[in-house]
Image (cartoon, rainbow, N blue to C red; front, side, top):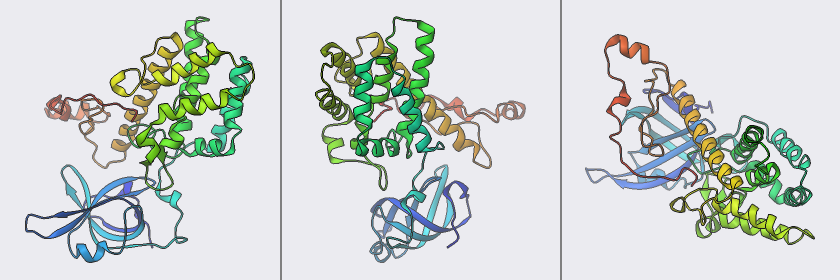
Length: 347
């Protein structure tokens, strides 16, 4: 089957290919006719899809999280693209590789893990080095850490995203400790950067569509991470009690605010720095992703759709000169008319 990639689908395109179904809901149209509300995914993106005809019969041929063979037609819908599906059926195991349908980091996971190993081996603090070595010599932890996304959505939502995010923060930590000097404990900040989201390897499921696990929903990655770290610390003879408290405080406080899920607000210099670096890296990645998505469109407006996480439109570049010359008003000027709500970027 000739593959149609989601990033290439435009209005009026015929669509044919294999896709991962990440949402499957039944609805009823105004005429009383049942339809299927779907979301389909491949490694290049996601799209809404609908089955309007024979919805009940076609719906029996696949389930959510199945990889399906699909045919349809792309139409404009509410400012975006939607696929009206004419045929859809599940593919059998062995007829596809699930990694072909999940987004992944542009960086090689092996290369990133070697970079992480180098950061750990270069630490001067023997206790922190021993702790990190113990954690990442565990094959299960190591494999999951190199694969996990950093979030279900919002920032670094792709395979290898967690590791990419961690290495980015470690690079920022290197620069900020050089800037502010010896008041910052560089090894402690680096250890906090490496471990702040380690609980996400168990909080998230990423073997198919990205979802939360039961333990993720019930306990959350902050608590999972502190428990993992505490367990490994108990196996290291002579690990300083104060160092353990300072490190765990960084994990517990890295969301910054109580309303964002942090059991504690950051109260040490390293914890405060980690919070801001984590927040900045997540938001920069989210904006860069928006810019890449806008650049892939044939007629980019220069503005993103309204972004709830930022409570604003984001200017992605490209048309300011054209708009001003034509006397048009940029789309973002309708601004700040979206819903006012505070959202946590990290969930």
